[in-house]
Image 1: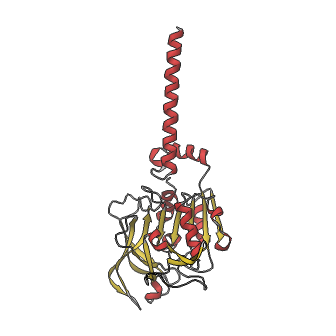
Image 2: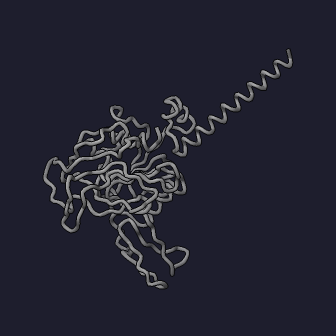
Image 3: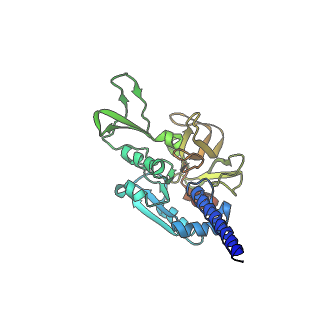
Length: 320
């Protein structure tokens, strides 16, 4: 009888060990973003939150640029919409990497003027600290006055290309050297201009074209939305025109805008189809920890009535 009891005990001990191991594996792949907790079970989301605490979201904003941070926060927190537990707001002047590390998701919008150090900070938040970042429209497309707009390498004579998301800054460890912050490659797209700077935009809502989901429709940022929808904007709530970096291995176009024909702007050709939502897996292979929205997510609902895109931002980026 004693031997049977010992055998049962050993079996139970092994079973508990297997359950614990499964729990550890589930935790790690959920934390890394490889799977969403809801893909395992809604109950696993609750268990994960008990371990980690509910997800915390930070909206970082500046003084100018596209987006309405207050409206986005309202949609995320209101129980009629997403009912997010903790959504904070912080002006860019008060943000440090230490602040960012406290949050599971950081959203940057209405923050046109950012320094090279700011861009490096947000990149480090993702790459070095495993954070999740949503970058909105024209955030970071205006330099600080004392920043260089271009640089030539004195040794090679090579001109360092420096667009608005590719900045040059001094190397603090070597005054004779410089550092290039390639934030455009980090996002996987390059900024061209805001649409209403290139085209005459009418007052009130008007039709621009159609937004089209990537063919599988499986990306969590667009899951459950119609594959093709009309897209309306107004002069005060427009979007940014960006181009995907050619052959970028980390960038994935999730949602596009089809103008229905080639669009010529005031200074350049905008093309026929442009990205509206893209994701990037830089710093986290197999997990898209970075998303770019050329159109502020809150305006999907305010001007088009498409609330799913706002809801999916929260649940999709947090793996829920």
